[in-house]
Picture 1 (tube, helix red, strand yellow):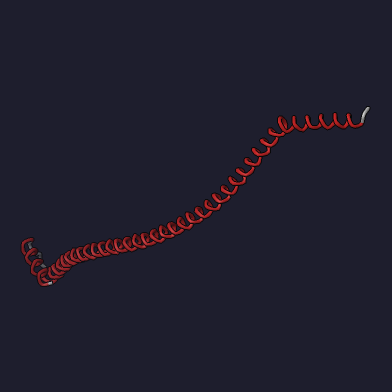
Picture 2: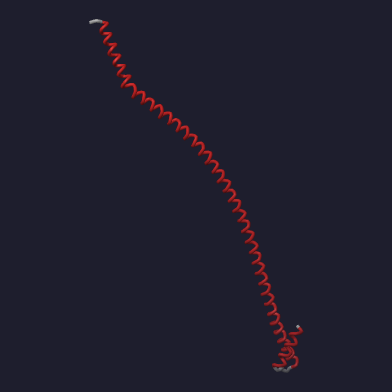
Length: 156
């Protein structure tokens, strides 16, 4: 065996092996690596975009929360104003109703007072006539009695 022939055979077989690897094995590996790099790059880009979108969504949400808070405060303020208006209106209506009831009561009291005054005058005239009858020891007929009552009532 010749060391040079062995070395030459090994060099030729190694060259064939390298050529075979470069021609058939290396391109799919390089393609897979490049695809993986592209996938990782696009995933990182999407992750950055998603992080930006999350930040924008947080800002948007905080703005909407502030707007909703301001709107809620305005609604509460309007509701309180409306409540005060309703209470004021109810007080005015209650005062008007109170005055109506008082006026009606005064009218009824005055009417009752007049009726009682008339009744009292009639009773007083009846007592006066009875006293006069006792004094005169005689009875007065109905026409005279009515005439006396009307005169006394007009004077009272």
